[in-house]
Length: 105
Image (cartoon, rainbow, N blue to C red; front, side):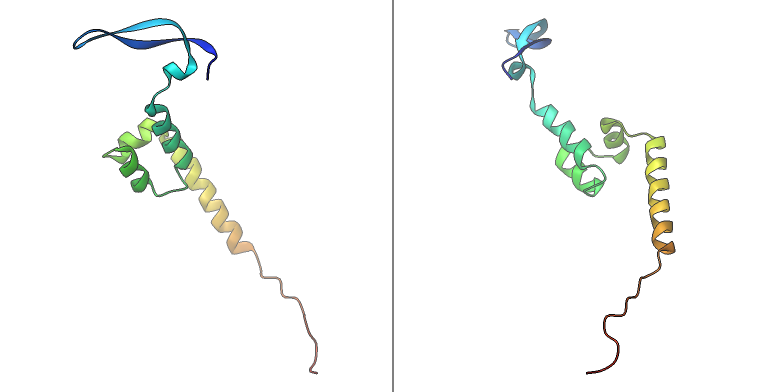
């Protein structure tokens, strides 16, 4: 976090006037809470219910949320295809019955 990298940050010139200044800054000077918001959204998508993630991140529509995390119609189609394949493989699995005890004692 102390490594210097090229980036830009907003510098306040006077009340209400900010300018982005490009320079070499330490990484910790360039990070913001927005990084956590996007990482949380991306990492938990598909693991937690989408409305719950949207409530945490403050998105009001699923369309905007999916755009925010970079999901497209193709991504959704691929996910749906994987889900259907998983369901089909579950149907094809036959239970394996194994004799544990034969006869009575």
